[in-house]
Amino acid sequence: MSEFSFILLSGGVGKRMQLNMPKQFLLLAGKPIFIHVLEKIDGISEIKEIIIPCPADFIEKTQEVIRDYGFSTPIRCVEGGETRQESVYKGLQEAAFDQVVIHEAVRPFVSREEFEALLAAGNESVIYGLDIPFTVLQGKDIVEGNLQRDRLVNVQLPHKYNTKKLLYAHECAREDRLEFTEDASLYFHYYQSEITILQGSEYNIKITKPIDRKIAEAIYKETILMEG
Image (cartoon, rainbow, N blue to C red; front, side, top):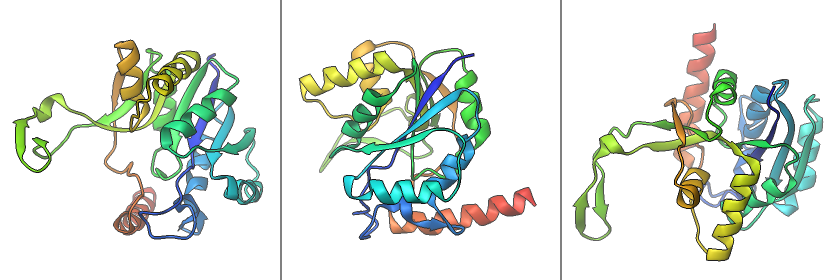
């Protein structure tokens, strides 16, 4: 059976949400958002440890909240970086197992089944993605070209990778002073190797702006009704 480290990115400081605290502490159905993610993965036998890169000022609070829920999987918090990429890098340096799963604390609607499908997928590099349902053009102030949306993918998390290979790619990016918005693009840049894309879910949103919080509440209510 494969064994995985799990990195839960919790480095955000809530600027886009206009908050004085990291957005992962926002309550959804009475629980901090990141707790919903931990509840989905706790007890998955392949996941042997959880590493949470978070802002230095909130490490103690994160640990406090976690203790209240009594998770069985070993969890440790580490200081995150100034950027998302740096937080992943710091998490990878702490990872003890050959394979790693990466997820974001503010994507609470990922399902346990999606995690299990990711772990079971044959390729060592696997992500979730969605088709893009709108037209995308290349350009900033003026249109410079067309993009074929049937050849594009909206990248979601979670992802899984070989830990050492992803860490090496991050080290290369640091040396080259390149920044990427997520790990699939970084990994592909250095390896040009196959990354499997699993079908994502429209419910698996990332909560980053005030409007996302309202959408999240609606999704939660809908999922409760479906389960009922």
